[in-house]
Length: 167
Image 1 (cartoon, helix red, strand yellow):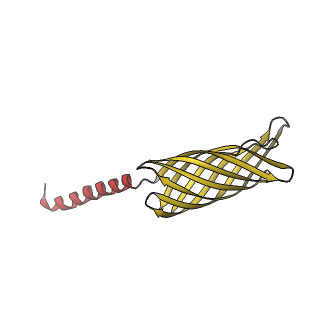
Image 2 (cartoon, rainbow, N blue to C red):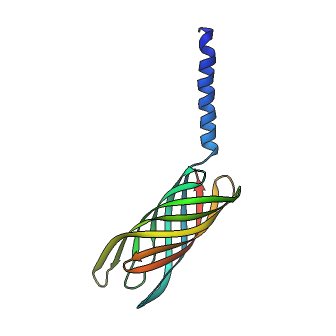
């Protein structure tokens, strides 16, 4: 091999290895699942139930995440909303293992009541905030509050605790 190719070949392989290590060290994809208390307090409908969600997130920048989630807000007798949520999270690092965040997005929901043969759908805004604590390199926990606006003509609050796993 001609010696003039040694340095460029070493730079290409060395840079590729460094990039791969950086990508592995800075996990960008995460998965989470949570359970919580859903509450609706509207005229004629004051109830609470257990809600849950499963979400997949991508850390686009150090301070910005994108998430997609399946969220079930419980059963409130006349409405049983569930659906998919697409949100952006703005993060602020309080400590290397603690973040606080604000969240804004859209909730594409379906609400049905089998007893009344009723089915309704919609896409409405969701806002929230919370905190995340990274337990170790891969696992974390987070607590958050979300408000789902105008879901079947009702505003629904969800207080949840989630476990997260970074890939």
